Image 1 (cartoon, protein in one colour):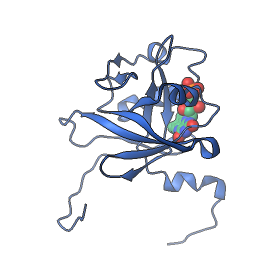
Image 2: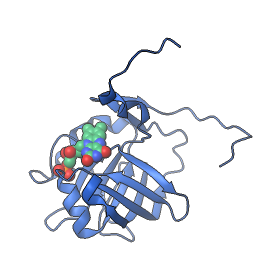
Image 3: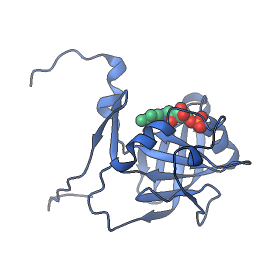
Length: 178
Ligand SMILES: Cc1cc2nc3c(=O)[nH]c(=O)nc-3n(C[C@H](O)[C@H](O)[C@H](O)COP(=O)(O)O)c2cc1C
């Protein structure tokens, strides 16, 4: 491999685990949405997910206030909406209406599910100890919804600056441990 020096500012694009999700929060006037790609699993059961939300995002304050959200996993058909949602703020507009996405009531949290996404996870805030320093919320998934008819979800994986890798092919290895 002919590897070359690579800018540190671009490293995140190599390591981002993805998939890109749409994080929905409840709100007094209306629910909100943001695009989020900085997330990682931190525990199997209960499923815990760490997410970084900038304190400049309106969603950051909503998540602190309402203490629950949904993580909705879009596939490539929604790529344009994913980018659009991530380039404006719910302070100014109703993103569900603006981008043709449908909020559906969740079973166990106040935040809505997004109908158009093939999987939706209802989460409550589990640990806020790193919120002030890093904007890092640890969420507990308390209810999961998946359309299992979607066999090879073409999820989006952000490589930076509007470039995405699209997943799709599934391979199964007998020796897989997990
Ligand atoms: C592909 C993509 C990935 C993003 N990932 C994150 C992220 O992981 N954390 C974050 O704070 N903002 C992320 N953003 C930016 C937010 O989605 C953006 O600031 C959004 O407009 C915030 O909306 P809000 O003010 O309504 O909360 C991402 C944007 C895009 C387009």
